[in-house]
Length: 419
Image 1 (cartoon, helix red, strand yellow):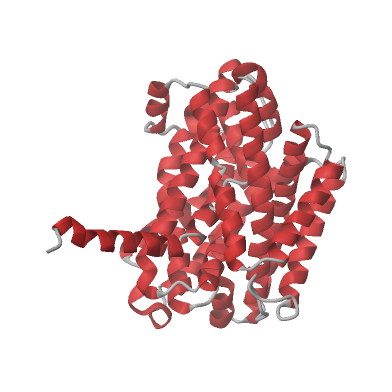
Image 2: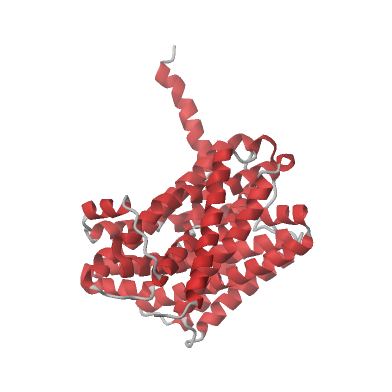
């Protein structure tokens, strides 16, 4: 006779195996929130405002998980991407304008990723004229010549290397008591710079393209409704890990740069400034994290944009499809890479403005995406018993209202004359 423990082991290991087979879309999507623009935003936030922005990650992790879970659930239940559902529900005209705005936002984000590749390469003595063409070719080759399983494995490996920032956080030996106090003590400054950073933090943590990519990859992976709980766990782990990594980036820059009164404008400056303060090893880890995040995101953002536009316009899309079967998908993916890398090749381009515009554009465009999502996921004919609960609706609508409020406030403050 088997013991009680023996009887439980097969179930436990079976659950682990199912989760490992489902794992991917949630963790990868959340990880890419920490892209080049995000790392720059976190670095500047820590260097300029110290620990005073750490509190934002606690209230932000819940809506991040909730919103990504909604996309995973819609993808599993309907078997269709977000832009595909928008087109079917609201027509081609609205979808076309939504995709046009999305492409504008995505293009600045893609340029931001290539600027991160250029900046991290220069830290290690590699000029952008060498790093960008090589990166562009590698990115195109991985996506165009791979399939979904191989591409997902590459992305999961890229997600693992975000641990570099957590290791760096422990190496700088911060005052953990002070960190804990600031983490649970929200502070708010009615200041133009503080609001801009706050919007950037939210815009890079909950970006509009993430919703499209999460749902599209969930559909392409073919996750069954019976495995929904594992997909939800995938999303939850991704949201928590992403927030922890972002937290450590702010912490590192707050502990080393803010405490010394050093002002920075880019993640590259943060990495270089860390050398005399925290040592070459910490600086190298920080720079490596920037390179990994930039390269990783430069693969996924053009992919997310290509998924969204092709689905929205009714074209074939997916890395499992051959070029002849989905020509528009691969042409758009290629064009976005060429523009993103090509623009950053010019030495006169202001990389700071590119990154800043990309993050603020995320904040402005996000409410529109969330409204579409909420209308779709609350459609009983579409979602049946899997439509949103009251809890999910409250969290989602509060997020929309906060985003609209922040955007409106910041716009008014920018229009007002400086005193």
